[in-house]
Length: 125
Image (cartoon, rainbow, N blue to C red; front, side, top):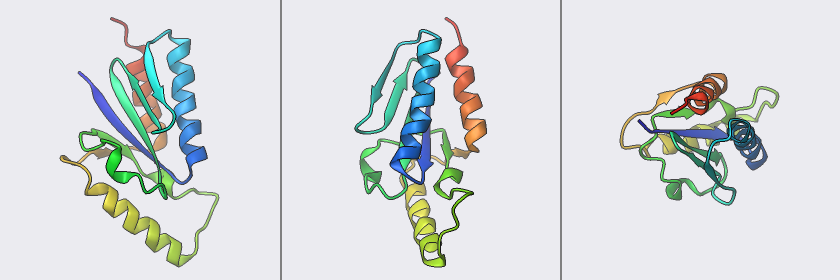
C-alpha cells in the first residue's frame, strides 16, 4: 500500500522545515528516499509527501490529486493573526486547493500527519 500526503504551510520555510524533519527520520531509519527540494516533495517506499506554501502559485504542478491525507491547519499559523482581507485570501486559496483532488482526502492535524508518517517510516519489510 502506498500513501500520498499534502502539507499546506504558510511559508516555504515552514514547508522545508516539515520535510527536513521527515528526511532526518528517514535517514535515522536507514530508508531509501528521494527529496526534491525544488518541488518540495519527498518520495519514500511507502509514501509521498508534498509540501505546498500557501502563496506559491504552483498548485497545479504538485501532482496531488491522489492524496489520501491533507494538513491545512498550518496555512493559518497560530502565532500570526492575519488581517481580515488576508484571511479571505487564504480561505479562497484553500478552497482552490480542495478542487485539485480526484477524491476527497482526509484532513489531519500536523501532529496526526507526523504520527502517520512516523508509522510508515518504522514499518519493516
